Image (tube, rainbow, N blue to C red; front, side, top):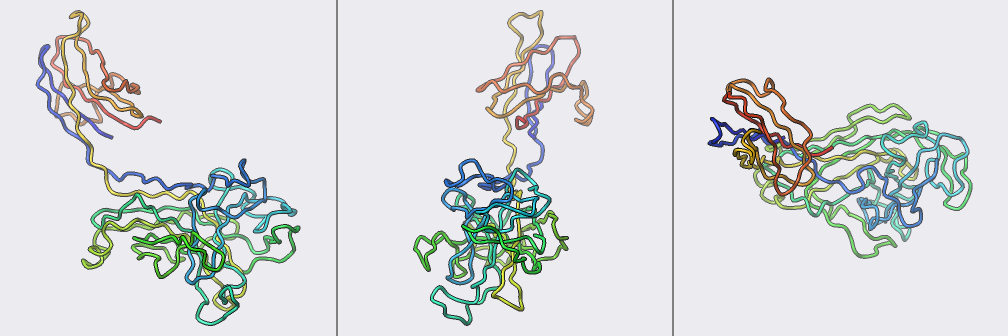
Length: 361
């Protein structure tokens, strides 16, 4: 919120300005709630249905530690035992409800995670796979604070999984292996077609972790918990700050593999992904006071207004009074860009006025 204070005596006013302290600003996370449909499902998914996400349409990419392609899924949690015939992953869970909207995102570790596409086994076994976004328009500033918040869901064991074109089977999911929520600086999405997959972020160009929650919260089966990770200035070495400054911020949401058997699957669900970034300093604007055209109607307050904002006017006869105690004259005044005008009565008393600017609801 931004406040501008003007002081007046009789009909002339010598104006001065003050502002509230700056505060963290929300950063747009595209498809933050996994509600953007892909082209195959323009109206979204029905109860229990899931589909592969298409990064070019739905923003979320796959993070893989090795070049083995990837799986990123969006899903409408199901509440019944039957599920949908074309629902490949997890037909039942969370009482059929997403924390926000109808869909959640799924990070899936897969059955062939100990192999490359040609069947080669060995060091390619990964610890986790993840959904990720590289926010190209959000450069990392090591001198600012970033807070990532996400709902993480523990999919219940026994939620069924079937083939993409076959009815669900009775195969249960493996035990919950935990989650990983990370905030990073840097990262590049592939444009090639390694192993038949593209739009993947691989470890060699995956970015640098600046804050994370590595499975520290116990999440009961069939429930979501809110997970928050925060980067605070000073968390990195001076050398890291120099090398990472200006790189794009990246979000990574992961599901851990079964540490004993990398050939089985594990799934973690995510929703409501929000990010607060660098503080936005309040920009002062000048408020003027002049006699109204009809002097019998008092004075006109005028200030530059911006589309998408609303304004309130407060008054006090004592400038030392805490602003919380000032009298509200008007509230929820719509912006009439480029300038708002509000008339105040002349009552023979010296008054001070405050104009508050807030985002419109």
